[in-house]
Image (cartoon, rainbow, N blue to C red; front, side, top):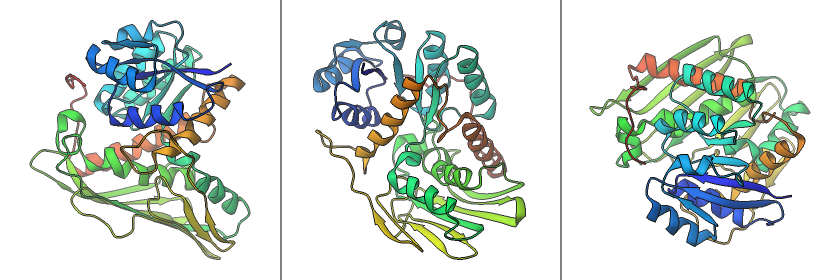
Length: 338
């Protein structure tokens, strides 16, 4: 039986996610409903993808008995209450990153999912790309020896976009792009850092345009992170350095197709999709979607590749870094229409 998806929000990221879904075998994935703040917008989205049900409210979506799992693609200040809305309605959830704006919110969402025995995963799609499957294989084989350093950068000139510069929309570089760098440190070191040191540019809009974060882990292992939304790096890549060599994940490290290690150079072509995407390499959503389907078929409540513990660790690091920079979100305010 196909996994039956509902799509919450009809923006660009939901477009790419849905395009990836409908490009796969319909016996494995079906999109049965979509909801947006506007019924017209939902209908337009549904017509484009051949979706049976379209709703002008999220409350209607979660009441649809045909929906098995909901993908939340709204702006991230909405994620917390949308996660609870879906879970309270008995739906499994895949929530786009970052799943919340605070550690407290993350803990409550995960607690709710566990209590209701529902699958929940934060959508850090990077971990499911074949490049990172190969990275994990290389690390397991000890091809680079003991890991001592991670270096990665994510610098793209996007500050003029509202979701970056508007604090009401959860703006800021760390929540939008720097979180990928943090997520990779968590994936590699698999523990909470012993020390976090962060410096950044906080704009007149009250958000972080960019920053540099150093994470020190046990055994004096280091993750060095640089991100910025006002400049374009010539190479947004990642280095994993060990006592016997390094692994380089090529730009774009958050959705890569190529890596180099002591074992050689490895390339993994993207799967094909039927429609043009808004964002780079969005065809790779298929990897994440297949893993979610496998988890649901097995009755698992969380994904081993992107666990609840990882989500808690990632938001802890982000929240700590932002506090050091002087950035704090008003998590009680309504973010407004999506």
